[in-house]
Image (cartoon, rainbow, N blue to C red; front, side, top):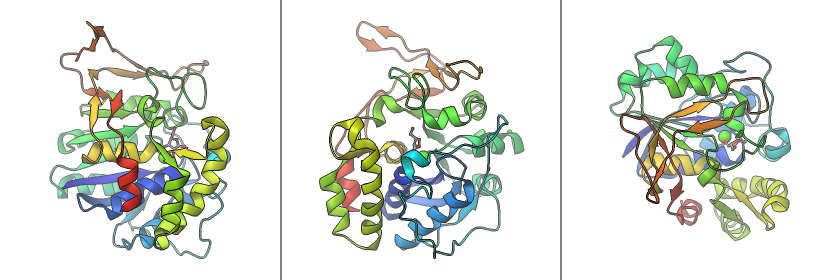
Length: 309
Ligand code: BDR
Ligand code: CA
């Protein structure tokens, strides 16, 4: 059983990750902390609370976090991908969110003391984690591992030629998290772009319970965005891949140790992640003493399990 806090900017693929974590017997979902990103943080919290309620997991605390970048400047959202409500126009506007009394940072810090072997799984901009590190620099001593959906090391980005959305939203926060003294597994576009939710899987969700029907409705809008990019009616499953790797639902088959840095310049490469990867005799070398695991290949098939949960 892996105990996790899932840090989300609930979006459609975040909703799939939340649903998977909420329903899996092998995951102890300690809390969801919410960050700005795909939508504003209040809408993200409403969406998170709604998915947990549909999953029968209203017991999981939802804590509201940062409303804008650690690095300063204005928040900006991804309505063109996830819809203005982050749920492809399907968020239940009547849902009254049940929110924790404490903030995201307070939740992370309190749980780091209370929960043995706590892991953080971050699938939005890294603002909450950076703020938690500022609030208590000893936090890494009490966290078993951090898994991040973010970055693109060998592939091109998705918001610019170089940068992936979660890192690009807040490069300074990502740099703060990568520089801290904890182990970070980076699950970037290098692998998440190969994890596909097909229209057949969407149909199976639609034939399921209230949670499945809600996920299927929002996937319909998500597939409108992805269809021209993928050449088929399907969608990318980014966030649940990171969740799966953190909790053992997805096996990594190539994930060398390296050091990852983030471009925090104001130039065209802002938000780019660079890793000290080195191929030696056709195999990726583990960098001695490095703290970042860069996931380059995973075993697939997990998407089929997800839709059955
Ligand atoms: C990431 O960006 C967000 O839009 C998704 O939810 C995912 O976390 C993919 O680049
Ligand atoms: Ca996300």
